[in-house]
Length: 157
Image 1 (cartoon, one colour):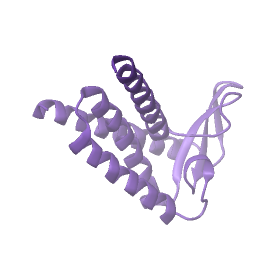
Image 2: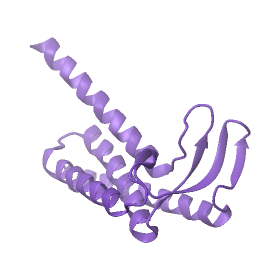
Image 3: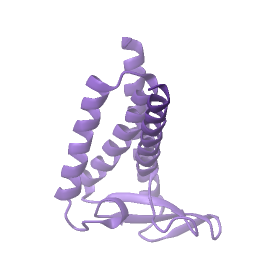
Image 4: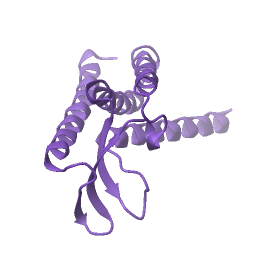
């Protein structure tokens, strides 16, 4: 794979981390804990929360468990990116996942919790952040890609 392309995928991960850090620090300084700022009242709010666990608040208060899970996932994602991913789409997807995972890991190591602020009411019961969105979108795209590739292989077999 071309060096320039590899560099651009690393830049995507860095951009994800920068947007995530900036947005979290903005709301950490702009709102107090559990304060909400309605953008579209009853639907989209910015509500500052400090999540000491992993996704959906699992393992609260055990910073080392989520940190170890995230570090293991990042190591696996980087390994896959470097040694297994052989197409642009997979590298892009992994860049989203790696950037999002790194953004949340920075929070855990710096604060002992993850800063969440995106509150979509009536649609999703959990408050999340930009990094979470990148990880979820990345994994969703990865699953969809694997399913479509398997269907294509089965059809060609």
